Length: 203
Image 1: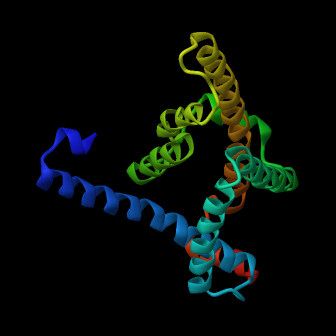
Image 2 (image 1 turned 90 degrees about the vertical axis):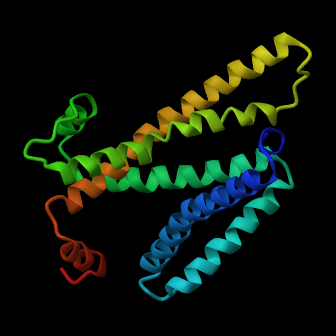
């Protein structure tokens, strides 16, 4: 679309800006995964090795995509199931106040919070909801083998995609409750040094 709408120089500038945005977005994922591997391995896997592993698994996912979208979806479904079970187990173990959890779902209040806490809350909402995914997921409809000349088949594909996306968002709600509940229970009112000592087992 940019190629048809813009002349050569603005098109190249837009391309460079988009590439920078993509790199900036992916960088946090790569660094976050490297830190996670470092913590899970108790420091045996250094950060640079975690970055290399993360880059390698990107090519692994691209390789799986060659065998069909369904196999890639099944693989990610397995990973999400493992994550849901592990965080669900931790949620049960830490036993957060269920009344406060339900209140927090429907009454988002934060007594005594300042501007910094408000910015963190907005950041959490943006990181969890990610409304752009609702738009990007519509691309999955194109991956289905549907005769687009027949409105009935297109309507049926949209219906099942709507059901699929709704189930995914509903499941992600509980996963996010588990994740936030565990971290809030363990790290609330703690400093960064307290959190570091807890992760390293020195506290």
